[in-house]
Picture 1 (cartoon, rainbow, N blue to C red):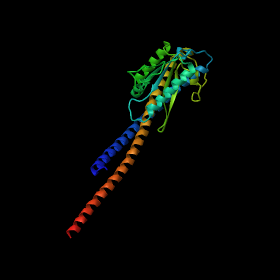
Picture 2: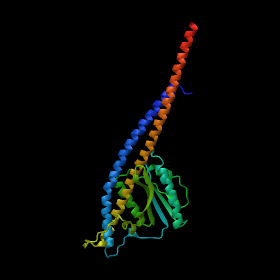
Picture 3: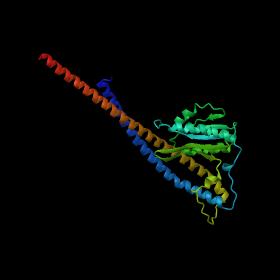
Length: 295
C-alpha cells in the first residue's frame, strides 16, 4: 500500500501534468485559429485564379500547357503531409495508414510495375516513411521543407515539383493530407496536383462569368502563365490545412489527457483522504488504549 508521502508526491505530479496539458491545449487552440485565419485569407486568391481559368476555358479557344499533359502513368510521386511535433494523438498514424491504402490503390489502378516515390513533409512523417519496405516504393526526404515552412520555401518546393513533372521524372503527382473540417473532424484526403485536370475548374465553387473579354496577350499565353499560380495556391492551402489539422488533433489529444489527469487526481485525492483518515483513527485508538491501561 502506498504511503501518505508517496500519494502526496503523485498528486503533485498529476496536478502539474494537468496544468501542462491545459496550457498546451490553449496554445494549440491559438495556433489553430491562426491557421484558420490564414486559410480564409488564401481562399479569395485561389477563387480568383479559378475564375480566371474558368473564363478562359469557357472561351472558344484551344488551350494546352505542359502542366496539363496526360501521360501513361509509370511513375507517381505522392507528397504526404505530417507533423514536426508530437503529442497530437493518432494524427500521423492515420495519415500513414491512408498512405498505405493509397499505395495499394495505385497498384490496382496502374499495375504492379508502377514506381511510387513518397515525399514526406514533416519530421514525424519522414521518420514513419523511412521504415517503409515495399517493392517499387522509394522515399525522398526533403531537408529544406517541413510542416512549418514559410511562403518562400513552399514556393520553391512547388516549383521543384513542377520541374520534375516537366522533366518526366513523374507522370503524376498527388498530395495526401488531412482535410480540416472542424476541431473534432479531420479526414485524410488525396488530391491530384499534376497533371492539372480540367475537372478542377468544373466544380460548383468555380463560376465562369462569360463576358466579351479582350485578352492581352492572347488567351493561351494567359492560361500558361496562370497555371503555375494556381498550383502554388493549391500547395499553400494544403500546407495551411495541414497545420490547422495538426493543431486541432493536438487540442483533442490534450483535452483527453487533461480529462484523464483530472479523473486520476480525484482518485488519488480520495485514496489520500482515506489513508489519512485511517492514520488518524489508528492514532486515536492508540491514545485511547494507552489511557485505559494507565487507569
